[in-house]
Image (cartoon, rainbow, N blue to C red; front, top):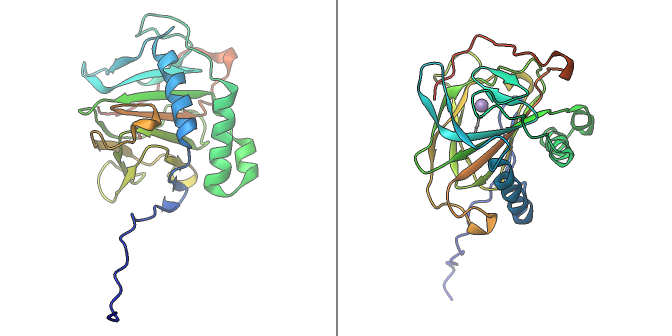
Length: 240
Ligand code: SIN
Ligand code: MN
């Protein structure tokens, strides 16, 4: 034997990563079973009472992703209890299991059980991306709360662009969000610009429950109370 040993190539292990202060990626956070269960739940929510739809922006453009919401209905740029721009039905409730998953996500992302306990998401935006769908750089700023955003990705890998809090330009970091990945952004990064410039077709293991495309769930705390469920518009500048 020569002294040269050939090591087999292993896929690069993806590790917890803090992309910016308060912005944490935990790869492979959801098991395949959990991913399939969430996909099934999303199929149910997409069927109604409010249908999965392309959101129309005030510019007249429609977003390329398709969205359905839980707890509160988001339309540009406010949260309401009924989906006035999508048939008028009352939005489906936010299930307790999803709130609890969000609490565990925050606790594990920050290594802080108290932060997990304190987390009270009351809405989820479920976005479906086909191969062509994208999302322009924007801030999640229609919430009257600075609690973190919890993002769960299932299906095809996305290039997630995570930027700064000043504007939609550089500096930013491109992160690949793979099926099962968790990304939490809170603290100094809560109002950072972010977007999805690209989805990589057929990159997921179909065992995740999705043969094609990508699902992303973002859990948020609106800061709205049921008593004051009136529309609260905010100045905004989101692009598709
Ligand atoms: C969003 O910014 O609301 C969605 C982000 C993503 O799809 O990863
Ligand atoms: Mn967003």
